Length: 387
Ligand code: ADP
Ligand code: MG
Image: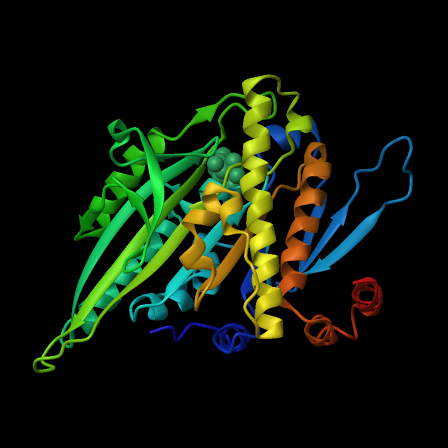
C-alpha cells in the first residue's frame, strides 16, 4: 500500500504530519484543445521537472520581447500527466489518515475551463480523484476488514450564491450549516448515502453533477457557478477488543470549486455579477483562513480564524483546522487568450504556497535544480526578500 509513492512525496507528507506545512500545492496544466490550437497554438505555460511552472506572455505588437515568470510548487503536472499520477501524488497519501479518523481536504482551484471538473470528477475511462479515492478506499477497507468494521457514507452538496443545496436530494431546499458540539460541523437535512461499492458512487455523482448550477457566461458555455463538495465519511469500530471498542470517523472532502475568474473579466451584469462577487467571497475567505491557520501554526497560539466569512469556510471549519491535511490542485490552461486568468491563478497559488513554506523551504526546494536554474533561484530569493 502506498508503495508507489516517491521519496519526495514521503518528505512532503512527513512535513504535513509534523505540522510544518498546512497545505500542499500542486499545479496542473491541461493540453490545448483542438479548437484552441486552430485559433492560436502558442502555449503560455511550460512545466519543468515536475515542480516548476514557466508562464510566458503571448507576444503581441506591444511586447515584442517574451515576458516570462517562473514559479515553483510542490508538484507541477504537465499536459501529459495521467489522472492516475495526479491521484497518486496528491490524494493517495491522505487515505491512510482518513481510514484512521483524520480529516483531509482536496480542492481543485482555477478559472473556468482549466480542468477542475476533469481532475476531480473525471470523464469516461478517465476517472478523476473523487472516484479513484473510492476505489482505493474500498480496496483498503477490504484489507483492514479483519480488524475493523467500516461504514462509508457520502454527501454531495453545492454552494451557489452563498446558499447550500443537496445534490443527492435536491428537493430538500436550502440547507443550514450548524456546529454540533459532538458531531462537529453538520448540514441539517443533508442526505447521507451509505455507499457499498464504487459503482453506486459513480451513479450518485453523475446524477448530482447534472443538478449542479451551471449557467452560460460569455467566458464559457458551461461554466460551473457553484462550489461542489463531496464529503466521504469513513466510520470504523475495532473488532474483537472486548467491551471497549474504538470508534472513529475520518472525513475526506473533495471539492470542485467554482471558476476563479473575476466578474470583471466575464462581462457579467446583474445576477451574474452578484454571483461573481459571492464566488469570490468564498474563495477569498478560503485564502484568508488558510493564511490565518498558518500564522496560528507558526506562533503556536490560538488565533482567530475567519471561518464565518463564507459558507465554504464555515463548512470546511473542521476540515481545514485541527489535524487536517489540505491539498490544493491548481488547474490552468496554456491557451493564449486565458493568459491573464492563468497568471492571476498562479499568483494566488503562489501565495498559498508561501503560506506554508518558510522562506528556507523555498530555497531548499530549488537548490535541487541549482545547476540548471540559477536565474530561477535568484528570482525566488528576491521574492523571499520581498515577503
Ligand atoms: P473546469 O471544470 O475547470 O471548468 P473542465 O474540467 O470542464 O474545466 O475542462 C475543460 C475541458 O478541458 C474539458 O473538455 C476537459 O475534457 C478538458 N481537459 C481538462 N483537463 C484536461 C487534461 N488534463 N487532459 C485532457 N483534457 C482535459
Ligand atoms: Mg467544472
